[in-house]
Amino acid sequence: MKFRYKAKKGPLEIVEGVIEAASEANAVSKIQEMGMFPMAVSESSQAASKSVQPGKQKRQPLKAVSAVRGGGKVSRKHIYLFTKKLKVLLKSQEPILRSLYFLEDQVTNREFKKVLKTIIESVRDGNTFSGSLAEFPQYFNPLFVSIIKAGEASGKLDYAMEQIAGYMDGERQLSQKVISSLAYPAVMVTVGFASIVFIITFVVPKLTSLFEDLGDKLPFVTKILLNVSGFCSKYWMIMFGVFFITVIFLFYTRKMPWQKKGVEEIKKRLPVVKDIIYNQSLCRFAGGLSILLSSGVSLLDSIRISIPLISDSAAQGELKRACQQIVEGAGLEESLRTNCKFLPDMFVRMVAVGEASGRLDEILTEISKGYAEDVETATKVVTSLIEPLAILIVGGILGFIVIAVLLPIFEMSLFVQ
Image (cartoon, rainbow, N blue to C red; front, side, top):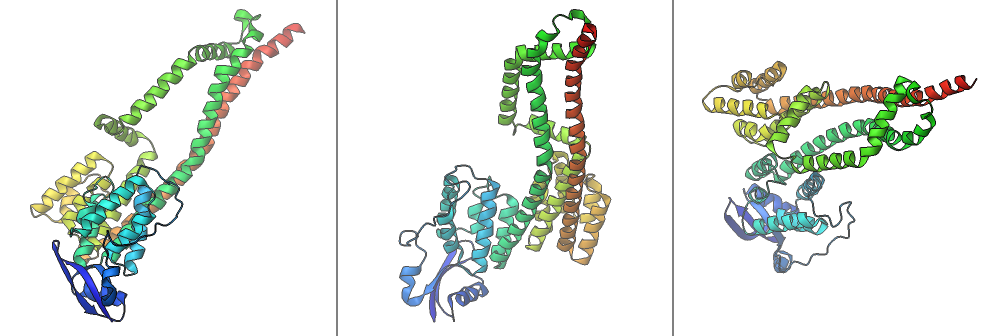
């Protein structure tokens, strides 16, 4: 069978021709072996009807129901699902342009559909897929784009997409485990303190009339409770308003440098939590560096691209200085050991072993898995500590309220007797 094809040869040149192959999948493989990137492949006799032309191609949108149907905000979940589906299509030997058209039909998010449409137009006009993605850095970070670019250069775009999907899936699972572990304690603490505030603000003031006859003879704990309750019931609207305004202010200034720096400082000082955040950053850094190296990106570029995966700005500065030292001719181990004080000694030693053996990407993958396990274990420990501690604190406050209310009642009953 003969197939007419349209393929990219280099970043700008587009080649059209006819190739003989047993099947369409076989034709795509042959085109890739020729060092070209297939954009459209069709049987020679039906090329006009099967070519990927936006004005002629008839597409039937899928009636898929999405959890974010009609939404306007593009989340990490949308990017992950796009990556996962594109990986499957490319591994099935579908040309990139046809795969993108297929995914455009499935997307129900308005904003992401616009993004995909722009990417498709860019690829159709002869730009590289990686270059088209780079136009949207808010959705596709340098790590994503660099792996795609390396996959295009090696002719293994499907493998590159598989690498990205695997990395994103690992990050997603780790985040979900942390969130699910902390969800129950967070709900319990929130409900507990909300109940306490409600009792102090609205319930206790109604009991005040019971204690008016005792006057100054009220127990000390009851006086404290009544004073706190009186203040809260009198100014609860002002307190709620201040709280609401503070939350809104912090939300809209969350990207400001002063707030980011403040959050970083708080994270560094929280016991146990700081270790979880630290290990998670190392996990992401090692995983990102590993996937870039295995995709064929140079060591120096891989480190530079992976720097944003570290959440600490001071650590990012240390890595930038290490990159500069590597440019000046120093070795990887020497540069990391001299500049990167945030990296554990074992991390640097393992990197040195990987570099010497030529298996740096594999070593980094194992390091990433190790830190992921540490994060999961530490999260379970924190959860097991938070639950009884929250019960103890909330129970203690409720116990104080009960004692403060019952003490004067007992005293009145004794006085009557």
